[in-house]
Length: 283
Image 1 (tube, rainbow, N blue to C red):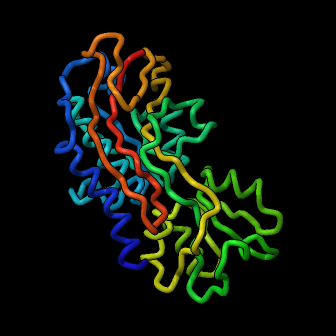
Image 2: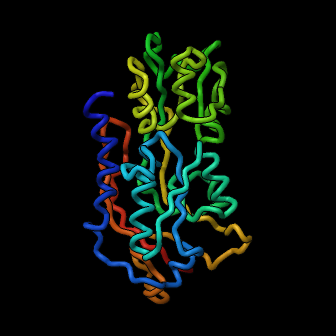
Image 3: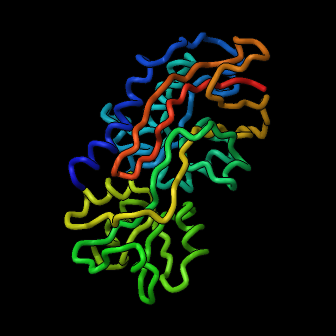
């Protein structure tokens, strides 16, 4: 990955790490909104490894970082509850846990299908979807991907799997069990390309010297905070919603300010330009 693209991916993580210094409102404790957000008294955040959009590193080491990890930690602090990162192998498992109500928050691509199980905030950032090709690949352009004999890896249960399975006419879509497995499959020649958002692709490319993220994009992922609509005990709580401004109706005590963060558009494919101030409130 070139230095400009690497620094831009990392700036997202760093910008979220200073949320507390940017927020204009401190979070009061013991609110009804906190009970909706963290009904067990701790904020269980669903994460999966290998991507800066979720988590990089081991939470137990104290050096973990990532947009989902940092945002969850900051939101827990503002809500006055303990932070519990729950790390799964892949995003499909995170989403299954959210659907079951066994995690309290996720940070993921807010697709229409996922809105059946999650209440989403407004979009926090958008990231281009692209392809990573292995060392020595002759492929130079997006238009060369969909051809006979091409095996394109995707994360099982991902947006990429759903979209490319529908759109490809010639290439085969191959499910991979994890991002680490996908890197190994690219290295061994079992895959001719891997498809996901570019923030993840650049991280994978660092693990596979000589690999390349192709220029251009075949789509966009719109990342947002997601709160499950149902809990693990089957209880459907008072509905919660995430908004970009304080709600004028109802009690101010039913809202938690979750901070403000600026993200920048850049060559890596990060497209976010909005400044988000988040409020969790009851409706």
